[in-house]
Length: 128
Image 1 (tube, helix red, strand yellow):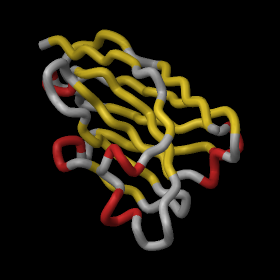
Image 2 (cartoon, one colour; image 1 turned 90 degrees about the vertical axis):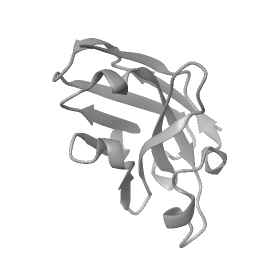
Image 3 (cartoon, helix red, strand yellow; image 1 turned 135 degrees about the vertical axis):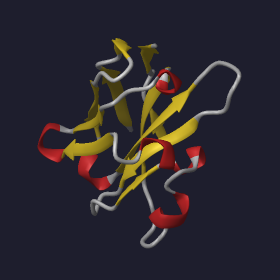
């Protein structure tokens, strides 16, 4: 079992920055891929970014060049640095962790069913 706790959300003006953190406890954090998803009311949860255990990184097109996913395995923590925020980035952001068979990350990184463990979410609100 892995327990995930997000923090760092809040209210920010458009163009501003936030850094989300995801603290993990339980089984070895480094053995999992980590991802950030987001969800707005009435819509499906969507991928934002993911980082495999071997540090392959993928981003959804809408955040490329603005968001950076990172991880500190020694501290069992993942991060999402969000710059140049836009009102359309407003959502609840979730951290997730999952195991991937060799070679499967490329095809499965964006799927919610690929991740076994989820945090409770943190609200990010970007005002215009």
